Image 1 (cartoon, one colour):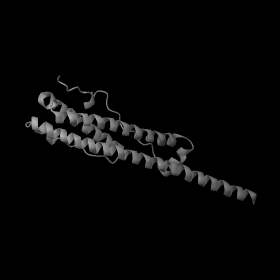
Image 2: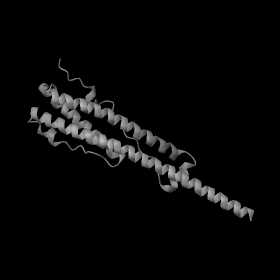
Image 3: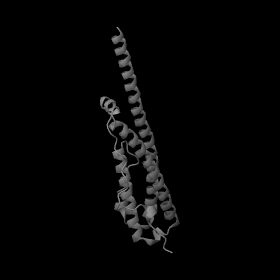
Image 4: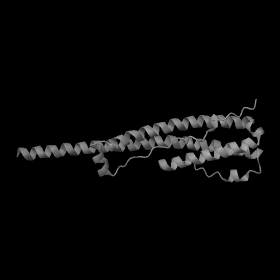
Length: 183
C-alpha cells in the first residue's frame, strides 16, 4: 500500500514539474512574441520614414522611376525570418535612396531630407535595441530547450529552438553612418 501511495505521489510531483516547465516555456514564447511586436512597430515607423524619403527624392529625381516602384519593403513580418527579410528589404531601399542622393547633391542638402535622415538614424537605434531584446528573449528559451530535463518537456510539447533576429551584415552601412554634410 505504501508503495502505491509513494508511486502516486511521485507521478503527481512529476506531473506538477512537467506542467511547471511547460508553462515556463510557454511564457518565454509569449515574451518573444511581445518583444517582436516592438520590432514590428519600429519597422512600420521606418517604412513610413522611408516612404517620406522617397517622396522627397522623387521631387529631385523624377526620372528615377524604378526605385520608386521598387518599394516592396513590407511593413512587418509575422515570423522572425520574415522580420529579417523586411529589415533587409528596407535596408536595400535605403541604399538605393542613398545612391540617388549621390547623383543629386541638392537632395542631400535639403532640410527635409536631412531631417528624415536623422529620423532614420533614430529608428535604426530603436530597431537595434528592439532586436537586442528579442534576441535576449530567444536566448533564454533556447537555453531552456537544450538543457536537460527541460528538453524533454520541450520535445513532448513540440517546442523547438527559436531563430535569432539577424544582425546587420558587415558590408552594409545604415544612413546614420553617412555624412551628407557638404560644408
